[in-house]
Length: 163
Length: 299
Image 1 (cartoon, one colour):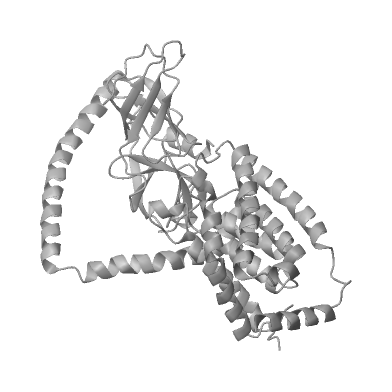
Image 2 (spheres, rainbow over the protein chains, first blue to last red):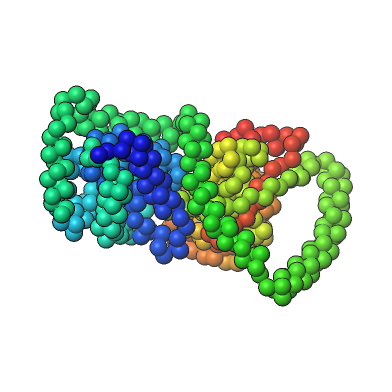
């Protein structure tokens, strides 16, 4: 079933779109609420195709995100590796959750990711002073069902197998 | 339907080999986690990762460019289809402004010559002449907790690290990271940025440190006894050798002298609208000047 050529560009393409959504300029009030697009896509693929998108893949995406956002090299990579690890660990359970329950699991993972980021910001002496820092967790949770359904359609359409 | 798919999924999942998968996810996580911490430490403290960053940045530039492109195209289209009337109005306004500025400039040239003569008499060093390069900001957002910009000029356009950035109103920031085609600049309002300034009215020297808020700077290390008032303007002092002297920076908005504290609490508001400009000028003290060569090497 699996189309070996499609997989080479479909998954990277979804990540490119996620990167674009991450840097699209938003009005000032919305900036802090921007969902963690790349993290959501990483979670989806490592849940759906755990043999394809694993810890290493997520780590490299984290590095690219660090470059595009101008953060320390390794800051997002660390969080993404942890997210991918947790997803791999629990993917068989999360897959069968109803969507709203998945959202909560994803929210928890994103909170861990943001906590790691905050830790690094803190060590650099520039910890954000606002509780809006956690805003992306809420918006990402709210958007997860749509991201999930969309990416599942993409996966089925291109007949990307399970591994 | 979904459950069925998942059942199928897990069936085929079982068929895959269980043991020849290389290191376990946990082992990978441990190694990569350690590697990330090492990378962050090196990136924060040492310059060794500049090249790696520049290379990766070149890979990511098409994505940034693709995001910027429709916005740029939108601006271009509105310009193309702008009403003739509006264009004529703008043209008239600009023409007036041009005449006005030109008249000022005539005087300026005379003043500059006079200044040079006086400096010669006093036997002091010449003021630096500067060259400028116009750069546009890419309409992309960076990390919201760092005050940074992406410029569409890079090493190819002779941008260098530490190059000062101004706009028509005042000092904006300096270049932090130069890549082949684009560069990243840090604003003077970033908490890690400090700018040597002087108060124009009294000549008092100070450091203007960013606060993380685009419309607020703090002046540090000024004793409460110093003469400084709300409304005073500050400009670059040229100390530190990176920014040329006498570019306007900010206006003092708050002075608070707390009895018993060693220093006064002073806040200022930058003249340049740091979060709202689209074009900036990269200035380069002209080559051949001794101070200019110091600038480039100083880091």
